[in-house]
Amino acid sequence: MSRILIIEDEESIAELEKDYLELSGFEVEIETQGDVGLEKALGGEYDLFILDLMLPGIDGFDICRRIREDRDTPIIIVSAKKDDIDKIHGLGLGADDYITKPFSPSEMVARVKAHLARYERLVSSGLPKNDIVEIRGIKIDKTARRVWVNGEEKTFTNKEFDLLTFLAENPNRVFTKEELFRQIWNMDSVGDIATVTVHIKKIREKIEFNTAKPQYIETIWGVGYRFKI
Ligand code: CA
Picture 1 (cartoon, rainbow, N blue to C red):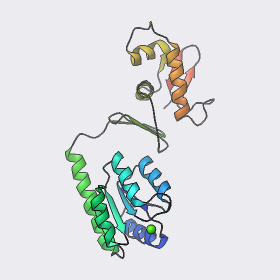
Picture 2 (picture 1 turned 180 degrees about the vertical axis):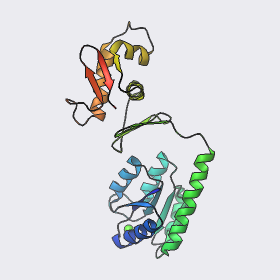
Picture 3 (picture 1 turned 90 degrees about the horizontal axis):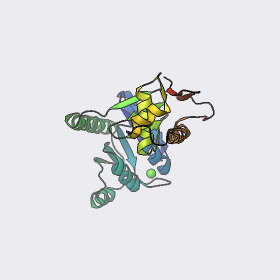
Picture 4 (picture 1 turned 90 degrees about the vertical axis):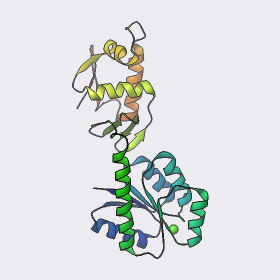
């Protein structure tokens, strides 16, 4: 099911859009604050954005630009003024479509469907799908080298990413620090094994709710580490 995020501060309009989209089988979320909306857009997994221009926090122009810097998800701008459309064009923000208020809800739904279909064709005709590892609340996109914990993206250094991915791809197996060091640092274990401990600590700070009681990477005392599935 496609997920749509509506960023719109006029609740009656947002609710109207949501009702029509839900009737067409879409999963819809509404955010009324520009800054929170942008955060959600960048942190979540949405298939399309419907974006108002005049918003509290950050305006729709900035939100559009920031989303485009990060991803190609279709963006439909809903604007109260025809002039805004010229401005959007002039700024080259990369929006896919514009609807002016007042609009017909069924027209909006039709455009949403068209953009989703077009984007789907674009994505499936291009590169193969990203290689994704998902375990409980953790999602690792190996192709894009990005990690989300309970929907929130976290930043990892290269070695932290490699180590987390290796453990997550080989769950329920205990690895010694030496094995992990050889695997990730690609050297004979003449290097500093303590590096592994330091990296595990940093990874836990990003993925664990409580680092004192790890839910993902367990320490097997006297042996090494195990990713619990
Ligand atoms: Ca507005």
